[in-house]
Length: 571
Image 1: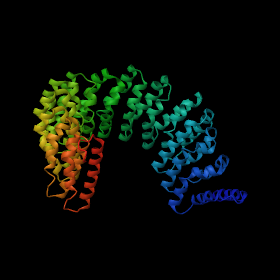
Image 2 (image 1 turned 180 degrees about the horizontal axis):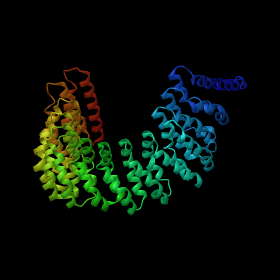
Image 3 (image 1 turned 120 degrees about the vertical axis):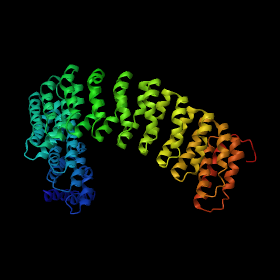
Image 4 (image 1 turned 30 degrees about the vertical axis):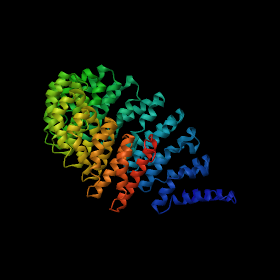
C-alpha cells in the first residue's frame, strides 16, 4: 500500500512538470515509513499539510486508506495520528465525507496502549458529532457493533465511549440494539470492560429517553454497584449523581439513595474515598432535604473512617456540606467530628480540614463560632505541619467577617505574630501576603503597634522571596493607609537600613524605595527618597547587582518625579 501511495504521488509530481510544490509533500510521505521515529512523528503531525496538497478526493482515496493500514507503529506516533484525525473532517470534504475517517480511527481504537485508544475515542466522538444522521446509521453504529463484539477486550473498552455520540441520532430500531449491546458490556466477563461501561454509564444515560432510564439503565447500574471488583464499584459511584439528576425525586430516593448509603460503608476504602469525594454532588442531586435527613449520617461515618485517605476526602467537603445544613444540625453532627479531625494523627487530614474549616464560620454565626470553632482555629494555627498553618492562614478573612476585629486581635493575632517568624519560609510568605488585608481590618494605629515592626524585620530576612514580598507589602500598606502615614512610619525605618553592612539588604532597601516611589507624596519623593537613592549610586560595593538595581531605582524614582507637580524648579 505504501509503495502504491508513493507511486501515485510521484506520478502527480510528474504531471505537474516544473512545479516543485509537491516535492516537500513527497518527502513528508516518505517519512511516514522512515525508520527514524522522530521523522515519522514529524510527518504525522503534518498530515494536514499533506492532505491539503493532495486535495480532498486523493486524501479520501489514497491517504486515508494508507493511514488505516499504519496502526502498527510506536505509541507516540499513533497518539499523534489519533489526534490529527480528529480535526481532519475539512480535509476529506466536510461532514458528508467524514465517515471516511472512521476506519483509521477504528484501527487506533483497538491498539493495546490505553492513551492511544482514549485519544482515538475522543476523535471518533468529534467526527461522529458532525456526521449526517444517515452516516450515523450506516457507518458509526456498525463501527460500535464491531468494536463491542470482538474477542479482544481493548476494542470493547473503546466502544463504551462512543455510545453517547451515536445514540441520540440513531433510528429507533438501532437505539434498542445499542441499549442491548451496552447491557452486555456492563455484564462482560472482563473487569476492564465493566469498568469502562461503569465510567461511561452516566453520559450514556444522559442521552437515553427519560422513560427508559428507570426501566433499563437503573438495572445495569444496580448490577455494576454489586460487582465483585472494587475498581468497578468505585467508578459506579460517579454515576450516582448523573442518574439522580435524570430521575424524578421519588425514583432517586428509591433507586440511588440506598446505593449511596451502601457505598459509604463499602468494604473497599477506595469506594468509600470516591463516595467522600462525590458526596456534595450527590447531596445537590438528591436535594437538601434528603441530604439533611439521609446522607448526613453516612457523611459522619466517612469523617470517622478508619482510613486516613477517606478522612482526607471527607474533611475537604466539610464547608460544602455544612452550607446545606442548619446551624443546629452542624453543631450537633459535624462540629464534634471537626474537633476530632483537628487532632487527627494524619497531617494530611488536618491540612484538608484547615483548608475549609474557616468557611464554616459564616454558617454558624458569631457566638457559635466563638464557642465551637475558635479553639479549633487556634489549634490548627499552632500545628507542627506547615501546610496546616498555611491553609488556615489563607482563610482568616472568613472568620474576621463573623467574629469581628476585636476578638480576632485578642485570640488569633498572637498566633499570627508567632507565625510571622515561623522557621518555614513558605509560612512566613503566606503571612506577608495576608498582611495588607489584615491591615485594612485592624486599622493603622493597631496595626503599627502589633505588626509594624515585623514588616520591617522581613526586609532583612535570609530568604530572598521573603524580602521581595516584604517590599511589595510596604507599597500595599502605603496605599491602604495613605502617603502621610507612609512618610511617618515606613520611609524613615526603611532609610535606616540603607547603610547595612550586607549588600543584599542594601539592595532590598533600594527595591523598597522603588516600590514606595509610586505611592508616597511628591515632597517625600524629592526631599527624602531621591537623595537616598543618589547616595546609593555611590555604593562602594561594585557588585553589578547593586549598580543595576540602583539604576533601575533611579529610573523609577525619576519617572514618578516627572509625573508629579514639581515644587523644586531645580530638580
